[in-house]
Image 1: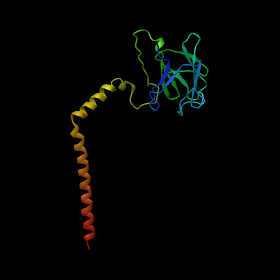
Image 2: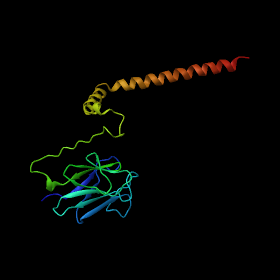
Image 3: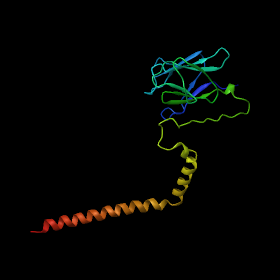
Length: 181
């Protein structure tokens, strides 16, 4: 039996939240409680976009004139524009990214690969070219910290020692100053 088609939130605040696309022909997404999928994020409009079940059983998304826009696979949609959703597509409503997961449209034994381009977004100070090897760099940094755990403690103790020395000098100076007639 195939799974229920759903949108899975990828963005940090609501990461992992699932919106199942079952039981209706159209689902409203927005910030208001009246929405089928209420997303309490300031970048989401009251009625941001809609996800529809098409007559052939496939899905589509329509921007409803949202303030911060709707994107499908990093392509900005115009107000009222409808685009088909395919398994693995990335839907971005305002600043919230979601993965469209439709197991019934997967090919047997196939896999889904998701690529998110950060070239045109202001989401990070890390250059896009540097991100390709970021995972490897982080692993190297973690392993070097595990190999030399005493290194950070030496720095802490050296800082505390320097602070103590400064405090001692100030104490002696204040003592000498108060004892002078």
